[in-house]
Amino acid sequence: MHAHMVKRWAATAAATLLALAPTIGTAQAQEARGQGLDGPGCRAVTSLGRVRGVAQDGRCAFLGVPYAAAPTGANRFRPPQPAAPWRGTLAATEAKPGCPEDLSAGGEGVEDCLHLNVWAPRTGGGPKPVMVFLHGGADELGSAEDAVYDGGRLAVRGDAVVVNLDYRLGILGWTELGGLDPAYAGSGNNGLRDERAALEWVHRHIAGFGGDPSDVTVFGQSAGAVSISATLAGDHPERLFRRAIIESGPGYLVHTADSARRTAQHVFTTGGITSVADLDRLTTRQLLDLQQQAQGGLSGPAAAVFFGPYIDGSLVPGPVVERIAAGSAREVDVMAGSNENETDYWALFNPAVLDLPLSAYRTLPAVLADRKQQMYDHYAANRPGLAEGRVVNAMLTDQTERVPTLRLAEAQSHWRPTHVYQFDWHVPYVPGLPAAQNLGAAHTLELPFVFGGLDLGAFPRGAATVAEQRPALTRLSDRMMGAWTDFARCGEPGWPAYTPDARATRIWDLEPTVQYAPHDDERALWDAYDFPDWAF
Image (cartoon, helix red, strand yellow):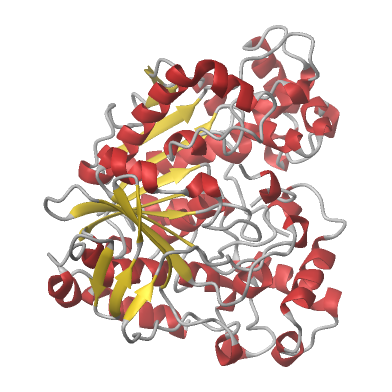
């Protein structure tokens, strides 16, 4: 799965995008509506030209379709520009390379990377709901071509059109250059603009693939989910999508404008950069070298969320949860969740994570510092016999993921039905093994179930567990795929909506249940904390 993805955790153009938004789903959608897949083969018709895909087990896959012009040459560090029409039929039969990513992942990818993939079931019938996925990877790693994100199974299971996409990463997509040249103001959100451009492309062209442009759900994990959270805080997100699923990516991880400027200045200082021209002279490989140098020596939250969307006053007008509480996403149905043991994931790369003593827990904010021992004692009392490091990681999971996710869900629940889940299944523990060989429901673990691939090879004993328990794990995956696609189709995933009074939560395990206010005593311990930006 994504063993390569986690060494580190995860203005004019805005006006242009918003100006285009009111036309979405109207003239262009009506022009394309009903075209669907053309003929007996895997062919689609769009206003940009015809597209030929490849048949895959009851569905068509269209791979590497450009949704914007190449962000190269004069477009480098600029907002995405519209894709140009093509002559003849576009062969979309092979995946394209993803965007350049951190050297810890091999530095793979090319700058001409603004492509998307579409999976469409061959079941006929009317227009189908559309699901658009944004991958994670701390906004510096990852690719739509990662096998775990193959949308074919989900498309067939839910009779939906599934899309995923690549967006610019690292310096190329998430570094604010306005301090070097005002003409580049807002470039620190170019990755977010790429994602929006892809959603606009979907609205304009997805009818040609059998999808319903008026019924779009965006879903994302980790950094992708943070981008969705940021977009929910914007003006009229309902013009981009009708529903949103946020997997382990709460809005508190969206940077402030000050932190975006500090991050950019750190990059410039590291590389001796004094102008955009200095950056533009660097090759892709040199940019990745600079990116790695800028992050060298950083640790903790500053390294984990070095890149990412920020509050720029236009695309993201203000703090995410505040904006959502004020009704910015009042027309959007939201489902949000996290995994029971999110921070166990980092033990895949540093086993010492699970042995973190309370004395080393330095990310607890000052407002709670005098309660650290009291909070630890409370968590420990709920987990008798658990080692100190495991208890500390339970606190870290709540601080970084679970409680911020619940804050977002509570804010949205005042406006629209909102649904919350927690993923609890994990590879069974084996007594006597080191902690790092007994991971819980870690960050990313839900993805093989959501997409149906059940590739758990990155986790200790994961592949063996799938071989031993395939029928039970397949049932769990089928239920989750059903819930995700049911939510995309009608906004109802199959359990009660979340409210501040009842806090209904779907617990995903071999036998899924609904719990009301699970671990609510621990959630309440964080009430005094506003979860400020953790960025550099």
